[in-house]
Image: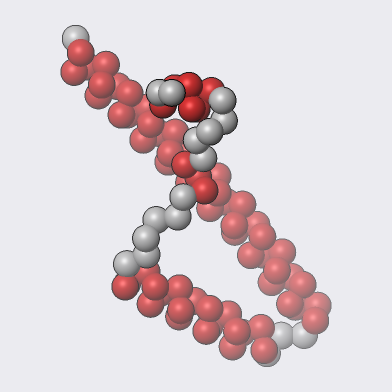
Length: 86
C-alpha cells in the first residue's frame, strides 16, 4: 500500500506521533509543571476552576495554531514538489 492509500484508509496518524523532546524542551516542561504546581497550591477552589478553563482555552488555541502550521507547511511542500516537476 502506498502513502495515499494509507491516508485514504485512515492508516496514517501523523498528529499522534510525538516529537522527541530535546534537553531544552524537557527543562522548560519541567519548569512549567513546577510553576503550575506552585501556583495551584495558592489558589482557592474557584480560582483553580478558572485556571483549568484558562488552560483548556490555551490548549485549544495551541491546537488550532499547530493545525494551521501543519496545513501551511504541507501546502508549501506540495508547491515545491509541483514547481520541481515543471
